[in-house]
Length: 335
Image 1 (cartoon, rainbow, N blue to C red):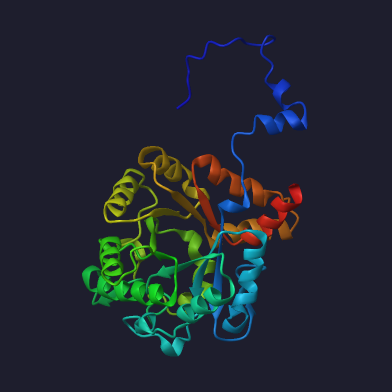
Image 2 (cartoon, rainbow, N blue to C red):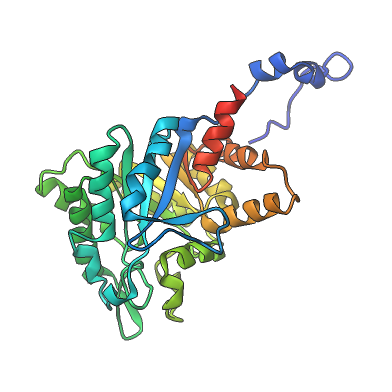
């Protein structure tokens, strides 16, 4: 909070521009610095040929056979971790998302390939049913209700499936009540005590997810039933504290705020009050707005670094961003 009782010397004794006059001085007083260590790269995996995602310029679905070489680019430039998301064959989708439990599904196969070929990068896998259900929701539907407790059983098995394939971090993004505790207990019981949980602890029912749903193919069959019964109302901030605190109590090691830039106040509030390792997801809609503006010469490419730095300023310890590889290259060139 700003100190409205500031009694320091005023102009002309104080000249704020003195510290900004020279490059070396600006570097000395810089408060927040973005580095490659802050970046997590989300990657879309497909069983088919490489295809561009029309709603996300410059982003492709990567075939399983090419995934290791693709991830090596991130590893070689120093990105600490990648996050995997599948484009599931529509013929494999059903009403309960049973493909999530197939130990040879896209994510499990990709995880094993990356583990064998990229030894020094972390693998984050998404636990949610929306890439696998024929209705595009994150849980089991019965009549007009997204069932919570019944969904937990499948999410737990999905998490165990991914951990068995070699995932380093399990990231439940479904927003079902109690899923972190359920997953933690199941992982511990099956000797995966050191597998971390990055909980999407405050995930809002946002309009910024559209391109992502196109990327994984859930937009084609997403029912008209709203996700607002499990994702948070974007009008609320106090509720986020309760959600995050509950996930911490249930065993989350890392917590995620999603989306990112429209929710900087939430990131700041969570980090300030709960002091947990806190991450932001610069989601597909944020990426596409910035990328399209850059491609149209409305914005400078440097907007990428500015936008990512604002997450650090708000208190985020790291950022999931589709700009990760591009940003890492830009940061390397700055040195």
